[in-house]
Image (cartoon, rainbow, N blue to C red):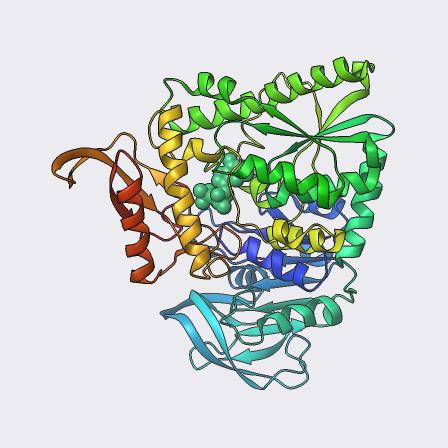
Length: 516
Ligand code: XMP
């Protein structure tokens, strides 16, 4: 793999994705990983990410200089560039001014990183410190008005660095710089294609599963569908999909899954109604993490029940069914702290929420993939567009969109409001533009209204339309006022107990997309 060393900035995931867009496999590792451990992964190249620190600050993250002697091609970006300069004997210092945002840069002819791009280009900068002198043996390959050493390289040692962020779209030729590093600097080939990923995963699933039976946690979403399709391709009828109706679904969802999957994907789906089990488990719970943990636990219990049911039906030896497929994605793994050294923000139900006494081995064929890659693979596998293009819906469903205790009546209220929102957004042709639009019921909040002839004391519904590329960051979508008005009218006119509709105008960060 290409290792992206995370110095604690929000850019490491973006860099990893851009490398993969260049069809080269990449993985994120923390800067605290020893050089020895990094080299054990047999990296084809290493990229040092940006970071929030000054290289001379006390306790500033660093890497051991032996990294640069290992013969592995290295690209340093922003803070990573400065770390590289400082380790190799260059000079980094305060410039007194910050360069931030669009910056005009002059690059040298004949450089590796900037081959086949214009000599003057607009790039995205964000730094206070700057490299003042490159290390011996390095050629300076770019400069700006304020930063004489904005990039350098030593082709013989395969070491490269640049001060700006090639991974953000604001850097006009950023992707070219990354690809020049990968293809020319490191001599890699763009072989990480959907076809190859599928072949590799199919091979791995067959090895892991052997002739054992596999059951799959089908949720109706993109991730579990693509995971199921992959496993189906690998082991065919050894796979049985169960669709757990946890009672936290949106209106019509269960019926849609029952209709679509079997018909279009040729995968057998068995629906199990477990809504009572989940409602009981959620009774009295209001704290978001407690709700998430309860839902995660009941999911697994449901599948264990499903397993018993299958054994009873087939009379098979229970020991043969020991694998459970999950559509866990790379960002879930990183956000749940599985990415080594990152903060646990929410326990995603399919990672952190698993109970300890789990009696299945997990098959997680998407664990290394980002969402857009999952879609790509889904299309390649022939998963219908209707499913591949579906907006994300969290595993815990409406359970984390009712702020307060989850009850059947509250679920019915939220389902009715959510259906209206989905209908109006689709009618307005906004499905493509919106990443997803959670609809949230503030069940613990009441406000006074006047409906018909009388005073009401009802609950607010929150609309949370967001635009995003990967759910790691998001912005609130500027929906047209007339659509908002229509949604608000319909909801307050037809959904009992709701007398107010409000719009969430917060980006992520600081807020997350879901309210819990
Ligand atoms: P947040 O709220 O963390 O959400 O900004 C990021 C994305 O993840 C979805 N989400 C989940 N998906 N299980 C899932 O499968 C979960 O527990 C879960 N929690 C949040 C959320 O809808 C958004 O797309």
